[in-house]
Amino acid sequence: MAERDDIPWDHTSPFFIEIDVVASDIDGFGHANNTVYLRWLTECAWAHSAAVGLPEERCVTLRRGMAVRTIHLDLLASAYEGDRLLVGNWMADKNRLKATRVYQIINAETLTTLVRGRVDFVCINLDTGRPVRMPPEFDAAYQNTLSA
Image 1 (tube, rainbow, N blue to C red):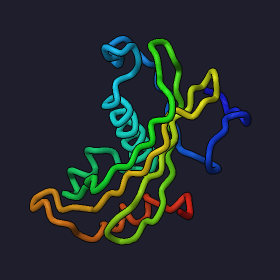
Image 2 (image 1 turned 120 degrees about the horizontal axis):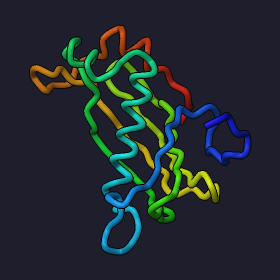
Image 3 (image 1 turned 90 degrees about the vertical axis):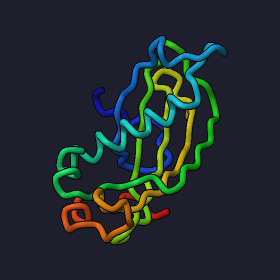
C-alpha cells in the first residue's frame, strides 16, 4: 500500500502489514473470530521482527525468542469477509529482558479502529524456557518506537 497520510494511527510511524479478511477468518456470527485478531497481531510482530533482521530462523539459531507474557486486547468493532485491514505495531518499554508491543488494527476503507492491544514479551532461552537477557542482536533490532 502506498503511504497514506489519512490513516488515523494512535501513534506516529507504525510498522504495519495489510490483511485481507477471508472466509476462513469468519465465525458463526458472521464476523472475524476473536482468535483471528490475535493471529493477525502475531503475523505483524513476526513481519516486524523479520524487517529488523530477526526472522524466526535467526531467533532459532541464536536459541533466543520473545515469549508472550500478557495480552490485553480491546475489541472495538468487527471485521468482515472482504475487508482490508491495516495491522500496526510499535515497540514500547523495552529493556534488556522484556519488551511490549502496542497494536492497532484499522479498517483501510472506513478508517475505523477495530482493535487496540498491548502484548508484553519476555526474552527466553529456547533450550531451557527460562527468561534471559536479550542478546545484542535483539537489543539493537528492537528499538523503542513509542514511549508508553
